[in-house]
Length: 379
Image (cartoon, rainbow, N blue to C red; front, side, top):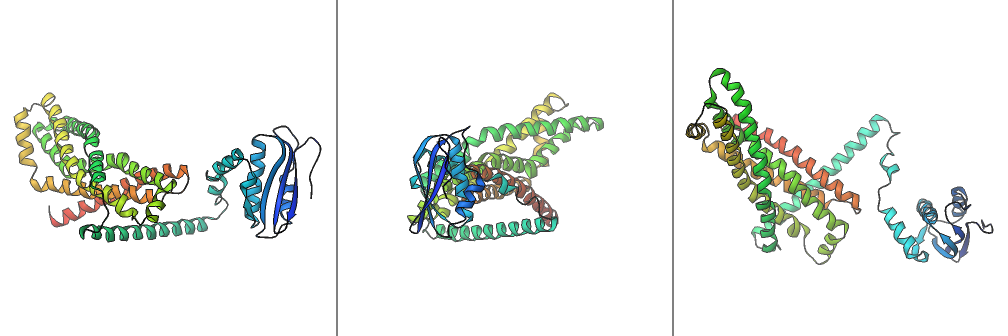
């Protein structure tokens, strides 16, 4: 089975009882002649399934990335043939590089469905969606169980973590929430003034800004901001813990990841989102005030009185209530994607992206459902 030539890269496969040893010899460097993949597969095909394959690099004089490519191909062929690999014979450098290469998703595997027909692709995607729904239902059920344990005093929560999360999701998010909602109110007022001036109805720009922000825009825009800022952060934090096996460590010590990681984040965001919505309403109306006073023929007192007459408490509380629901959606999306993150670095980025998309999508869906419900009940 030897494939050797003096001064060139070669290998020799030897049997040692119930195991096999792959001896590498020569210069495994770029430019040197080396064995082909067919020769490797031919040699490995002679081994029975379940045989342990070891490496021996004592005969290697020089090596670079070429030997890593060969070892990786050997690894893939051995996995396909049902062989057991022992990497202890590899040097630390090659073993670390091999581990790094295995942590990166295979590009060919992602595009492996390219040759499938349309109906098969639809079926596979449908099965994937159903599997995701099943996982989320289990996640939601576990959340409800641990939420009940919290009220019974059996949940393991650290008050220090909750306070820190309240600060992270509340105080630190206020500047960006205030800025974007203030600009939104300014834009709405500017567009409204231009149109209402045609009918000498400038004063009603206060109604437009007040109702639009309190009932809809303040809650939605704040939810979108928190999805991109906080939901992605939750997914990345928990996803990184998943990659580093910290979540497994919590379970080993008998600590529920749902109680220790998810409940504090959900509580913090549900509590902070209504407060952020209140400030969002305030800054949006201030933005409208700036435009109304500077462009339209309206005084500041008139603007504030008109908003007071146009916006009722029910309008205000509708927006605050919806913001609490949106906070729950953002927190659950971030924590769910984080806990279901893969075991490699790229999965953390995918989890964060997926958390943002999921949160924004369900915020819009929930807002549409609320709009229909409130229209039906007449509020």
